[in-house]
Length: 408
Image 1: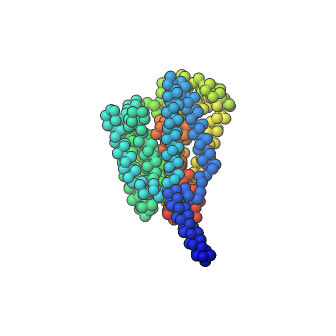
Image 2 (image 1 turned 60 degrees about the horizontal axis):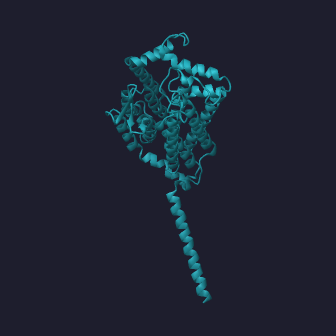
Image 3 (image 1 turned 90 degrees about the horizontal axis):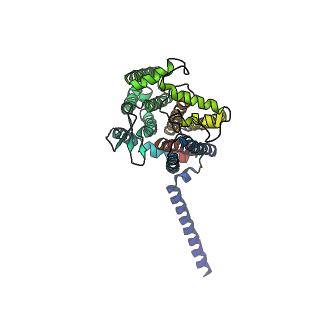
């Protein structure tokens, strides 16, 4: 009897052990975070969340000039919630998933860029620019999705066409066909800003993949020449560009520079520590787009130079960490992840630089939002998703090679 009980006990313990291992394996299979056995980088995640909360507060302060300011506040809260939810899903998704579906995503984005030209109520036009798809309570801007989908697609393209990329011209020709298909649609929307971001991000990734510098220089020079021609063909763009550079800013009578003047006056009023949160006055006057493109000027007025330096430092920290993650992934042979991280950081660096430059009067005003800070649904959501991808890349890079091979 004792022997039988002993045998039964052994078998019972054995099957319980097998069952527990099976449940544990099943849980790990359904939870990609457990596959990496890593948590997101705490310092990078903290910096991103800090900027989101800071932008949430500042966009509300900047929108106080509008009668429906609380409407903007609640909408931005919803956009941030959607972005964080999507970001959490991205953290649970292997990078190999984005590589697998990058081509269909790119094709879908091209289709969405065509849909914006549909008549109302599908397409939505603002100030002569058709850039949005109308979802009644939410205006979706496909150009923001194109910034990310182009990077995901180009990263896969650079791996699939590695030999052609390193040839003198073949890689450039194929890249121009890919980028040109998106640029044509973006230019038809008269969205020169998104065109520049998408094109330069793709070219930067091409350079990082080892393409020839001479040919890259020729292609970029041709691209900027084409942009110059297009600016001359669009009277509004030409007037905005020439009126900014023709003479001294403060003696320039053109209304096209009033936005820049108002931004600089607000920053001057802020001095070192600002007039106080919500106490700015320029947002009530001549400063247009105060809660979107010109939010950095509002920060300068209400929080002073200290507030602006805080923003610049946070962005510098996020981008430095992002480029380091791209370098680390490349050292471990994970080229797709490296190219994606590099492309996202390049996109953010360009957009941040241009936005801050135009708020400081160094560049003419252009429709560039400040990532994580400016009001906007599509831009906020895809900015959070993009940074979540970088966090996921870092998580996978920290795993041992036996697990990491699944994501190469």
